[in-house]
Image (cartoon, rainbow, N blue to C red; front, side, top):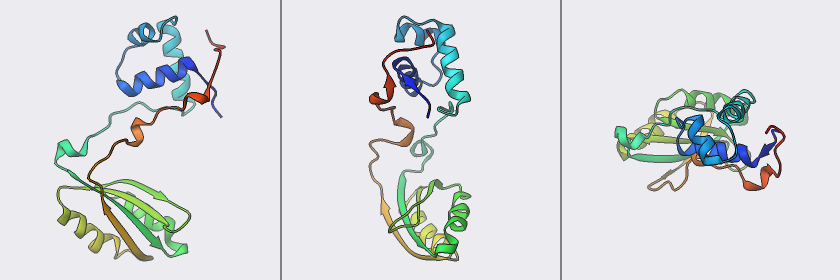
Length: 162
């Protein structure tokens, strides 16, 4: 497990605020750190696979104002195959396999509810192995995965890299 300290947490939170923030700005905002240390910490977290830096697209701005969560019950021997097929669709923004009542969950973006209905009835339900679907329109998202923060309790109290 990667070991975070308070400086790493501050750096990650600043990158979540603005992924293009310069090391010099981060150094000023973190305090008592050099640009060089900030760059080193970012590189270390990138190389360890702890963080990724990239663009986040807002589907609503592009006209995809309807979001739906769809849960699927799938034949046991088809779960991964169904999930992989659904992951190939442009309108699918999230795909996961689960354990429990639902075997696969996906999130879908669309321009209107008719697109959601078509996708569920003509694509999802016609995939081999899909037994049942449950769809829920998502009118409000308060927190998305890219907004997740590192829990403060994960940070070690002192830094060994300063």
